[in-house]
Length: 79
Image 1 (tube, rainbow, N blue to C red):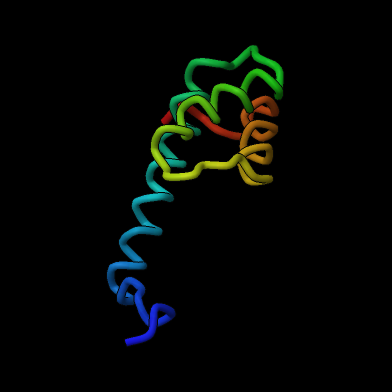
Image 2 (image 1 turned 90 degrees about the vertical axis):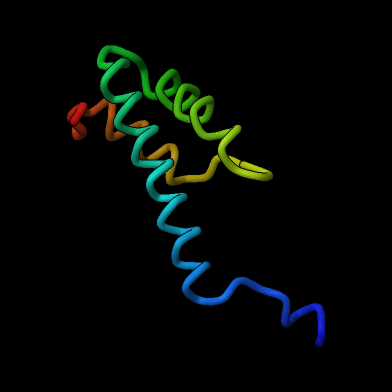
C-alpha cells in the first residue's frame, strides 16, 4: 500500500466534516450570544479562542472573519 492511499473512508470523512461544522456552529452561536456590542476584531478574536483548541493545527481563515462580521451585523441570533 502506498502512503498516498492512507486516508479516511468516505463515511468517516463525512463524519469528521460534520463534527467540524458542529464545532464552528457552536462557537458562532456562543459568541453571538455573548458579544452583541463587540467590534468585528473582538468577535474574530473570541471565535478564534473558541476554535483554536478544538482542531489540530488550527489556522483562522476567511470563514472566521465572515462569521465575525455577520455577528457584529446582527445576522445571528443566540439560538
